[in-house]
Image (cartoon, rainbow, N blue to C red; front, side):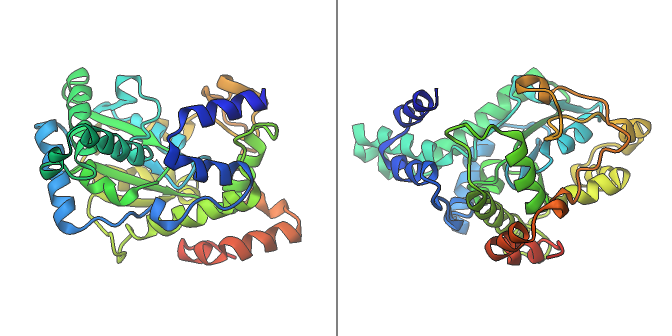
Length: 323
């Protein structure tokens, strides 16, 4: 089964992806900061935003929840935002929306398009097709949910510098979580026999890079924008009402129609401590009285704590976590 899965992965990838995936499968480092923050010039960004807006037309501001990496609390944040009656969550039954994550594939498609008639390169640039796709897709999703604000999520922030331009005017909610809990949750959620399972080092490395990317969008960061709200999962767990207050102000949603009385009764989805398996894990489950998803890493050995600190300690400080 593992060999079949590996064969499928290699069979579906492009030649330029093989080195990346091979390093991942071998347990080596396979990501760099350029995977999260590709350089976009102001002129390129303005062009992409204009293309996206042109393809999209006039719609309500979409809301996108993006996580530092899987197991960072995007389901919880999505569920809180989705409680608002003016929000259409998972529009088009898109339970995950990894369009930014697939941006490199979109650029590769553009290269294939130009290969058949290179002179088209005079009018098409690297991410133009991606911007037009995003705009047209949002227009179609808005047509399926008239009058609502589309809500989509993805537990990745690859190609994050593209987000303000591919999704212009969208309200971004960027979710951080303590990387040690992310690693702990990941290793307890996904099968150790999976060929795509990442190592401790790979997970810590991915979290560090994702955190570095997100914090550039925080107040004072080089990518700061009024359309991005950076949040920490732990803070939301500690005071969900405060998060909802800030989220409503950020998105412009009406606080008077929000069901405030239901905030603290929100069920749990996808807990790494759930006894359910496969799809059942992601269904809503009642929250146990002793449920606490914060600082589970405290039970780690001294060696694992020290190991994570060597790999990503600076990023912990960058995001405001204790080392």
